[in-house]
Each structure stands twice: as C-alpha cells, then as structure tokens.
Image (tube, rainbow, N blue to C red):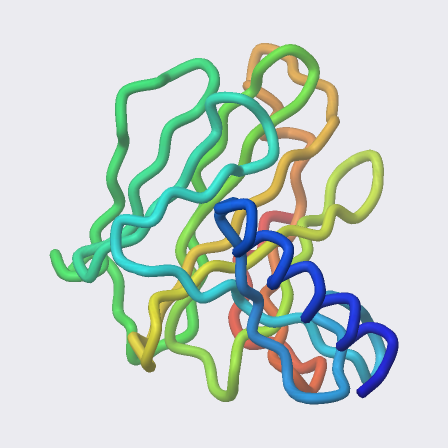
Length: 183
C-alpha cells in the first residue's frame, strides 16, 4: 500500500470514528484524483440530491436524474437546468454555462454531455489565466455531468462574462470531450 493509500484509508477511518461526512473521488488505482499528465482527474460521483459546495459560501450544486440544481451567493433560491426537456442533445458533445459575477469574482457552472470516453477535467480560459474546475456526475453512465469553478476576474457591467474564454472538458486521455468556444 502506498503512502497516499495509507493516508486516505486512515482519513476515512478517522472520519467514520468521529461521524464526519466523507467525500469520495473516483480515481483508478495508482492514479491521483486530481492531476495532469499520466494522473487523470475524474468526476466526483454524487448521490441524487447530494449537495456539494462550490467553494464559496452560498454556491452549492446538486444533481437529480432530471438535471442540475444550484444556488449562488447572489441568488440563494435554487435554480434548475434540465437534461430531459429537449433543450440539449446528449448524442452530440456539448457544454453549457451559467455565471454570476459577485465581489470581484464569478461563479461558473454548467452541464457537459455527449462526448466520447470518460470526462476527466475541465478548464476555463479567462483574461487572467486558465482556471481548473471540478466535475460532478451521478453514478452509472447518465451521459451527462456538471462542471463548476470560481474565477477571480474583472467583473464589470457584463457580470464578468467578457473575461471568459473557451470552456473545455477533457477525457482521461487528454482529448477534448466537449467544448463551449467563447473566443
């Protein structure tokens, strides 16, 4: 057992003993849960309705079989993006985006769907550099998932949208799974 495997096993046991909730990440044996090169990131597998923090207070996401729900610091009322209402074609690769500028940064999230292979990581090009986001999926092979990120970009009258470039989801081989070109 590697040092990392021992550390993770000890962390899970410690969390169970104190009753703390645990978060699981899917990673192939011998691969880091987040990384580059031969170490492939992967989507966090969540249960339907399980809330995940988007990294800042008030930014939460959760998935159901019907689609993506989320709240943001500026809008605590749940919002919804369907994957079953016919607005997206899951047989073709695609990425959607929802964004909200707030206090010098922007909360970003969206759907990804229809790509070949296994979605592994997401990047968002911005005026201040590349931002790496995270992926969420329901168990099984639903054919879609959710990406999210927070970016510190200039937030002007456009809510920060002018500072955003391409959003790209990559597969485990480093090839484009799906992309939303914005440039």
